[in-house]
Every structure is written in C-alpha cells, then in structure tokens.
Length: 332
Ligand code: G4F
Image: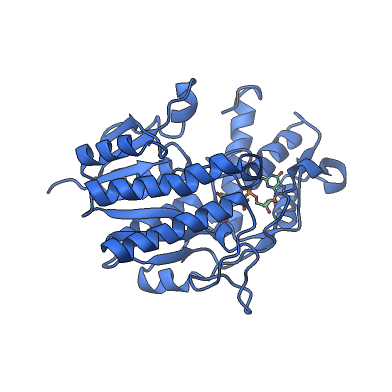
C-alpha cells in the first residue's frame, strides 16, 4: 500500500516531535520544515532520534513561495500547521512578529495549500488562548463559546482560526481547527510554566539553587499531556468531514495548585523556596480555562490517557534523573 505523506510545520517543537513519532509508527512518510538557525543542534534535539521516513527541509511560514514549491513537490495527504510564535507573554514584547507569523503566516500556508495541494487535509493549531475573557455560564469553554482574546498571541490565533474556516467554506477545502488547551511534557520549553516549575523545583531539591521565581499563581489552566493531544490532531484529519474541535481534559487547576503538587512531591516548602516576580506577569492575564471536549470524545472517540498527576510525575522523574546524571550546567 502507498505510504501516506504528511507535511508538518513546527516539526522541531514539542507537538511536532510527538506527532512525527505517532505518524512514523503509522507508517507515514513525514516531511517537516525548520527555519535556518545558527546553532543547528538546538533545532533538532527533539527529533534527532527519528530518522527513517523523516525528511527535514528549510522553510518558513513567512515565505509563501517556498511553501508553495514544497507542497507542489511533496504532494502531501495531510498538512499539520504547528509552527507559531507560541509564547503568550513574549507576544506582548514582539506583537508584530507574533501577528506576522501566527496570522499572516497561516494565510501564506493556506494559499499555498489551496493552489498546490487542494486535495490534502489541513490541520491548524488553534488555541484555547483565543477564548480570553470568555467563559460559558456553566464554567466551560467549548466550540460555540465567543472569543475575546487577551493577548497579541490570542488575537493572532483568532485571525488564523477564522481564515481556516473561511477557506473551508469558500474553497471546499478539508481545513480543520484543533482548539487545544494547554498541553505539556518533558519536551515543553523551559519558559512555559509547568516545565519551568518542575525543572527549577528539582534543582532546588538537589541543592543546586534556592528559589523558584514565577508570576501570577492565581490563573487557572486546563493542562493535558502533549502525547494525548497529537493523537487528537490525527483523528481530526481522519474524520469524514472537516470541522473545529476542542481538545481538553475538562479539569482546571491554578498555577499555585500545580506548584503545590510539585513542591509536595519534592518535600519543598513554599515559604522558603517560592518567590513572586512581577516580571513574569502579563499586561492582561487570561484568568481561567476549562475545556468541554465532549464533541471530540463522542464523535472521534478521543480521550486523554494521562492524568494531571501522571503528567507531572513523569516530568519530575525525568528531570530528577537528568540532573542527577548530568552536571547541571549541561542543559538542553
Ligand atoms: O505556561 P504558560 O506560559 O502558558 P499559556 O500562556 O497558558 O500558553 C500556552 O497555552 C496556550 C493554550 O491555552 C497555547 F496556545 C500557548 O501557545 C501556550 O502553549 O502560562 C500558563 C499560566 C499563565 O497564566 C501565566 O501567567 O502560568 C502563569 N505563570 C505564572 N508564572 C507563568 C509564570 N507562565 C510562565 N510562562 N512563566 C512564569 O514564570
């Protein structure tokens, strides 16, 4: 049987690397684009253990002609657009770059898709950050919840989300949005709150440092595991019709509660080791996220396998093992 071909932007990130593993297991041929970077190794550390049936190419969402050329050559069956400036707080510092990449970049890849590979299926990494201030009366966000973004990142994602729907209806393309709530793992960048808390707490427990410094501990998030969430991406493109789907655990916890769990597991005292630093606050905070994922659970039979605790345990054990084996200066 002919191998299915997938094209992934953002392949070197947390989600791109887990999705590539999943698709390679399913016998896909995977192509991914990476941007030029002066230190090549930094871009590949999440995917360097994968090689057979994986091809990395240079490309950029801001360069439409290169995207068109690649899609013409590769002829993918499935396109996963995971590339983004994905850090919400940093989007306040570089709003223009964020908007160019996350909004106009999506326009570029949609144009290339429409013109060069219209029979492919297209997945857009949409985000629960799009909901912003908006929560339904029952305390959940779902596919029908209005969007009131609270950051340049959220605004850029709303633009892209709407473009995807527009291309679906205007040009009859199989273009879908996965509205993913926060999803974490040991591969999460260290400046996102879960991995930051876990790594720094482990270092405190091992005596390498004294404090964990964070921002707003009163914000609530619905945290799942990235490995579960990439399975949802694949299911979304393999359903009979294109649609938009919320992917979430349906449970919410504050940043403070997440820190409590990690500190308790490592026997750390908050009074002694936790510091609040204003520099990690955002000009406007998204205060509360809790996703209703009944639609994808019922229709696509998706459900998360990891619990919040299993996920944090995996991260704690991983970094404990890592820092015990390695000198702490050798990070990745
Ligand atoms: O881990 P975070 O930076 O993730 P955030 O902002 O919720 O965004 C993530 O999830 C979105 C889905 O909803 C994605 F679209 C997006 O790309 C990204 O993956 O922050 C989580 C919460 C925030 O309320 C933040 O204010 O943690 C709070 N926080 C408190 N102290 C901190 C810190 N966040 C970070 N990054 N660093 C801190 O020291």
